[in-house]
Picture 1 (cartoon, rainbow, N blue to C red):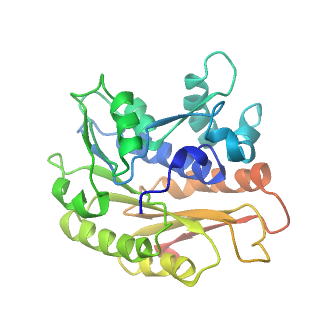
Picture 2: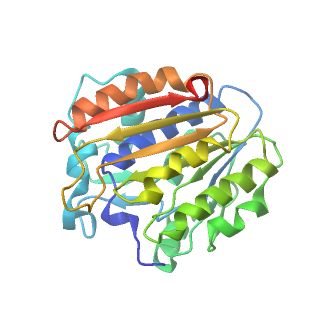
Length: 281
């Protein structure tokens, strides 16, 4: 299914959670001199305009990054993420939002490499335009990231962060995520794998985190719920990120990020968070 385009959802609450955590993962990898690869199975367009269609159609960013834009009381881990957003909007107006590849490009070092997969032809064209000056560090593939991830594992430096972030519009994506993580860990057992997932009211979505936990020896599962589930059963009321082989520092950072995002982005009394680790299994 190629109907999904992230531009309609850029900067929403799910992006805020995902990108706060992504920044912390990249910061951790930067602590060692040895280079690493960032691999994104569903890269999207790379960066997005919030002041034009399609982002303005539903203005989902207003309930996400829009709520953080003018706040000055950010905990350190959230402020680290916001510094990257402000750097994209140096004139003080919130008009641009990064995709995960853009954050990775800005936070990785000259010796690190990006490998980006995107199947949608329109978004791949935008991705290629965004990274046209970075060919030495960035390799783009118009391909199904689920199928092609194995072609870049393990990365030559034997260090890497792999983001698995499908749209889940096709219900088969839930099974494909499980299979992809299982094969990825078999090929690259020490890699950091980050799997984003939606909180929606369907059985395979609710069961996914538990199935992912069974695949990894070390893991952390982070969830942000921003509202009560809809009575009609439709819509996304939150999201989560499951990380296999997480940095030891991530739990402490997440303990800053999650309560703050509940307060800042929560819509009703159903807002909350979960921070679970393999130590609690």
